[in-house]
Length: 488
Image (cartoon, rainbow, N blue to C red):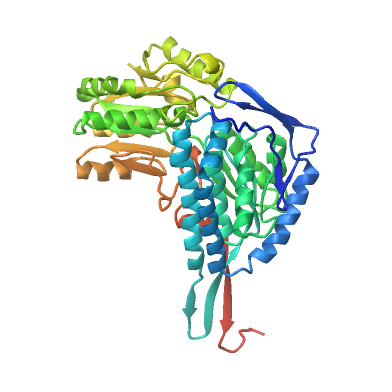
């Protein structure tokens, strides 16, 4: 195990590490062993007010910085993330219990990509111009002001970058609240931004749970909230944000279908299904947890899946050979196990993969991945988001049938289709009620691809060009060339 064990965490306010001084405290555990790392205090309401005030002050300076210079600073921050990549990845493992290989290859890489992408896009911000006979009309693209991000615990550093990069590119200030379960890496991002050259106070981190989150969503000095998390919390944030009609981006839950037609190579299908369910221990909102397999193809799929189960390695999250780590907390592990018991009780047939590690990791929050066969649409494991390593396999007969069943959910985040039939691809991508559809691959999220859902999976987008519109506003200007209009 890596020895640089974290022993404390702080807020990041006006360019400095500041301990929380609230009466409320929270505990931080290492999910790989269940060990208590430390206990710390939340940010107080006074500290949150201080952070908002400081961010407003810095934002007034930042919005006047030319877009080209803003872009250079973000690109430099991306370079620094790559420079400090190993230490950031280690923080992510201490925070989440995910494998170090994933933190290094995905979390750090996609975080740096976000800053580089929006750094390059900053210079493209522009309004429109219309020359009319009676006037010149143009629009100005302006920042919203101070924005807040509330992050989830599965990709803490990546989410902090995905939310803050477009906000800063557009000239906003940004206050980020990581999950209280994963508080470590966001402060490192604050240090990186400052080293890259943003004004102190422009990007800040406040630590805590519900009290801190509500202080941000109800604060009149914050103009936008971007939230990643579960649906119930998202609805509460929408209600809280109505106090000053905040702009909102909601990236909520999912119960995504992965649909495999019989013209798919079985090995390809097996690899996709395993990755779509067990990567990040199943703790991914877009995971294709409802795997629909054509009934004539089930035996081939099952055989290919079984041939790859030996590749599932649970173990020390800091071991590069591990590809399934621990779940985030003891409470979440118990929730996932309750879903597995539900699947057994309702008649689904399990096949377990991998072995729970013992020794130093016996008290870690590990769950053995499971593939359930003989599932039907009414089962709890098929209906509800589990956020753990649980795959439900269902069979179908026709394209029309599977499309109807795939859409029969309150969620609409992602979906996957595997087939070689071009016409079928067109029909399926049009018919699926989801914000994203992957064809012949799954969960690949390049920065150019807008990320977000529909229905109760939320609204608004992260990544892609669209996101610039969610962190800016347009001011219309009419410059008259004619006599003043007046009926008087």
